[in-house]
Image (cartoon, rainbow over all chains, first blue to last red; front, side):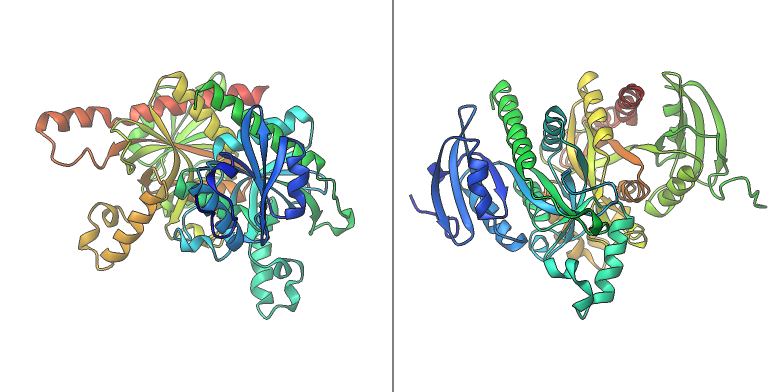
Length: 250
Length: 259
């Protein structure tokens, strides 16, 4: 059996249920909740660890930062039979009430990036799977973590967000940022649009949950780096998915 | 028409005339069919394509206002309804079902909309998703399951040209229309209609809730039918199927809001 070009894994190496952090350094923390986790590959930014949850094979694969590398990871995982994904990441809050330490459950994304247009015209919405949104919401509620459900601004340029004034297109970036904030966008991150667009195109179940690490509109609130609630909530939501799948005999 | 400053310009109503919950059909002719499910429905206003009835469901004030066809007139209705206190919208309509597994008479519970129209770019850049409220979608899905109505969940194509969809080949831009149509199908779009994108975008930016349920006609089944089959399809392509899901869904939502 041949290994995929970028992830360097084959179908036995991964489960149908996959967690997608951006940072390879977070794979181990997530796999820490699996039974018998094994690192099956680590090529480029793609680190894959596989184990079990409730007796089902599950994996965690880092996507690297941004939509281009995330699309490659999801393509190759889909090719190997994975069909259920939860992105687990960090983000910046954009509404005053979305504060560091809170969780953000992403129900849809602004396609402010270059990858998904290679799949679908820009008018098409990047939307999460409804059941995944519900399970992530329930998991956060059951665990008692403050969580918001909303839209993410999914972009390709980190510093275009953090330091727009030094970009030649500063005015455009700043005006659009104002529109996103006024339009009620919950948070900013860099991978969900691709997960959702590919999820629609390939009929996958895609969910996304992020830790609000900072709030760019309220910098005085400082930073939160406690990713424990984020990971525990994602694990719990995946377990709820597995339980429902087993009930339905899927 | 002399403008009465107390009334919203197009819908000709004021605060108190509508409930916070409003059904939004396109066709003014459908308002009565929907209002029939209310307790004590009253005709409140009828100006241009905007016809409104208000009554109650489970003791809560609810309304139905027709939007007319298309996102431009729909945006006006939603703007003015919000201005007089509405905060929860359920679009009810008809649409073409565009996945092969869709049968005529199935309903579409739409999660989001393709912004293939000219109105919503006046509100938000095109990259912003037109997405329904999760609680409204969940209530509509529960309602469909409860009354045993076959349904599909997914995005709708909201377009500005009816005949661009039904007869693309007579348009000068036919190759673009056909190419994009194929992309919508491949991308998992379940149906095609003309108002949802405006309702979802306006609801998002004004922090209101919106969802939509449409009865579908299968575009595939519509090919090469006998007279008898056409009659059968017509009977199934009945907006009342969408109305029943919407009414039951709103009742579930009202109960949830009370908790």
